[in-house]
Structure formats: C-alpha cells, structure tokens
Image (cartoon, rainbow, N blue to C red):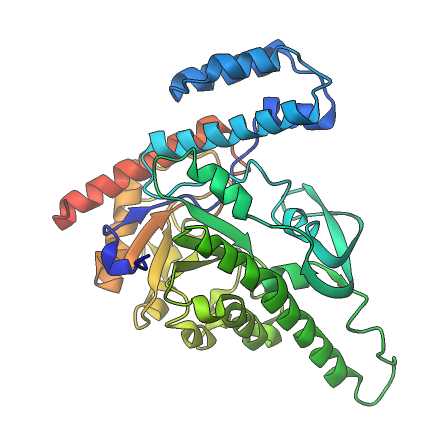
Length: 394
C-alpha cells in the first residue's frame, strides 16, 4: 500500500477533527430512557436531509421507543455512525469520520478496553460534562481491540477516505491516577522527586508501547491511511514536554512513513512545544492546532486581523503539514465563508505553500448541535473554495 504524503494530497484538504454530538435517539436507548415523538422526528428529518436510504429501517427500529435489546442498540449505534459520516460527506469534507458515535468518550472508551486500569469514579471536565477516571493498578496492556473493528465498520459505510482519531498515550497517563508505578516510593525520601519522575516516565513508555503502538499498527494493517493522535493534555505540565514528545515517537515507532500521522493538540500554550516539536519531523506528518478560538471575527489577511494565527510563524520552518483550525467550536457563531477564506489566505501567505495546509475546525464539534455543526462545516467548505479561487487552485 503506497503511503500518503502531503504532496499526494489536494492543497487545502479538509477534514473534521473527531467528535460530534450524539443524537437523542442514539443516547436515550443506552440510558434506558423512552424515545419521544421529537426524537423520532429528528431521525426522520436528518435521514431525509442526508438522503439516508435506510431511514425507514431506522424509524421502524426506533418505534419500539424503549427496552431495546443489545442487538437493537448495536443497530442504533451503527445508524448513528451512518448519519454522522453522511453529514460530513454532504457538508463536503475530503476526510471523514463518524463523530465518534461508537465511543462513550475519548478517555473512557480506550481505557475500559485496556488491562491494568480500574475506574475510580466520575470527574467533571472543562465543558461541564463528566467522564469516568481510572487508576493504573497494574501493567498497561490491551484487553481487546480499541478501534480496528470500528474502522472496518466505518470503511463499509464511508464514501470518502477515513481519518481515525486515537487518544494519545500522554493524555491517557495524565488523566489517570497512578497506583502502580509509584507504589514502592517512600514519601520523604531524599530522591523522591527523581524516582517519581522515573516512575511517571515508565508509565508513559508502557502505555505508548503496549497500547497505542499496537492500536495504530492494527489500524494501519487494516487499511487505515490517516491516523490522528489526540493529545489535549500535551502541555499540561511544561516540564514534561520532552516526555510527551518521546511518547509520540514511541507510539508511532516503525510505522512512521507508512501512514499519514496527525497530532491534534487543543487548549494549550503552544509556545511550550518549541523547539521540542521539531524532534517529531519525519515521524509526524501533520500538526493540528486550534487558531479560530484565539482569533478575531473580522475579515482581513493582515496580522492585526489574524492574531490568532501567530504560531504559524513557528511552524513555517518545519516540515509539518499545518492542520489549520478555522472554526471556533465553542460558539454557535457560523463563520462566514469569507472569514474562513481570509484565515486560509493568511496562513498560505505565512507558510508559503497551500499544499502544506489542511483545513478543519479547531477541535471536535461535540458541544454543538448537528444543525450548527453542519452549517459551520458547509461554510468552511465554501471558504476553502473561495480561497482556492484566489490562489488559482483547481
């Protein structure tokens, strides 16, 4: 299988980052809540809008309203993936995913399939949602497949190429308690800080090598060409940036160059990544960061209008493809195509090569409704088309 390089991509290739909201008709059956007329009407309306041929089959399934069997829940979940993929395809994205309709949450989903972890309870995340937090109580490993069967199912649905998001090792470690690697540390010992650092480093190496690498390898062997590592925790602890960089390299290993690898880092102090990030040249293909969240809503292609894109100057002299966030994902503001165009044109002016830019939202759109998500993505595609016209790109 010939590997994908940025030169084999269409300039300004578009993709969604990963997550979208789950429809109420997808959520309620798993919470043992009865579906309402409004839930079923939404399934019908979106099925019609997205031209889903199997809509009637879904509506018949949902007409039961509650007490769904496991097999019926699996079918509902698959329909949710079908709808999510078709939404992105209809919006016009080049690379698609289902909005993580098969997953509970980006941390809980992989950790519950790993050995060596035990869930301790729920904690609140930044957007006032909750996730189950686990503690490492033994050697990390895989109890079952994380994403390969999921990918194979999506490959049977999607008409466009797929980009698979995978939660990275550093985020899994940082969001977990550790009861295993520190169990022999003696509080107050003279070398406690150094031993604690080594314990955490070993925790990170083991998660990288024993869970993330085999997951990426399995996906690649199954035919996945675009693999995204999600690392929202990347700069949480500034003195661990070298360890974070090492974990990415360990996670990809000998797969470098065999697939197109993206890393997505959001809500971070990106300056902390430099110069360490350059160590991943030749390992990572694309570095995707948020920009629109930090930017103005004014039109223009000058630095005073596009101040949210300052970090581009640090990426210019690297070999990375720039994953350009052009949609603010924590607001219902629908970015006009002209604003998307100007953000892209500014980035092209800084980077100097449109083939080194891929266009997407800042992050996953799970906090937005499907209506807002669709309108944002449609305008993003229109903005890309406007930018291509200015740049003379067919």
